[in-house]
Length: 252
Picture 1 (cartoon, helix red, strand yellow):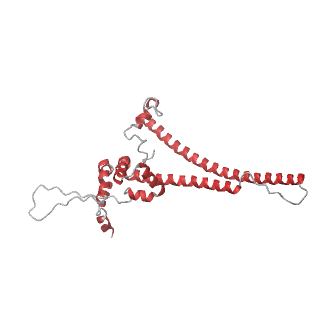
Picture 2 (tube, rainbow, N blue to C red):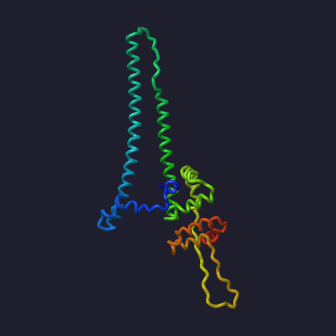
């Protein structure tokens, strides 16, 4: 289910228990061990992915067959119209005057309608691809906290789920920028603890939660980096004008 369908997804629901509980699709009692159960779940996921790919291929083949069938139908209609016209002339008209026959359906209009429908299908596929791209970036950046981070970010932007889905479908890069997914992670420096007082002018280093801070945390403490608390704080810190200052200085 899409991250953007916030109202349809119960974030607190234990779907694993539902799948593996009594009467579930992967009822735990049907397997000799949990490893066998998880293997069955993984196998089902792979099978579902392959089935989806197969259905998409069938859709493309059906579309091609429809185009060919429509072309043949147009040709057959033209043939029947010409045949009827010639038969009528041979039976009722001895002159050279030809009475035009209006076709029941205008082939030009049919082709235009077909082109419109195909264009709509292509646009829909492209929009779904764009939406999936934004959702993938969210999951890669925030992991299991993606739902919470997305909801908080939408609240801060004053956007509804439908607004953000529309933006992601039409302009995925704009949506990615709005969600702060192009910003570089940051790195944190912790002040060194001291047990004695210094007599000089030494001042302990203050934490700067910028791009370098979070970059270091992602490498050294990935679990903490992807936690809900840090993910929310990171979104707030990204609004700071100095968020990328040290990162840019290091790159020059």
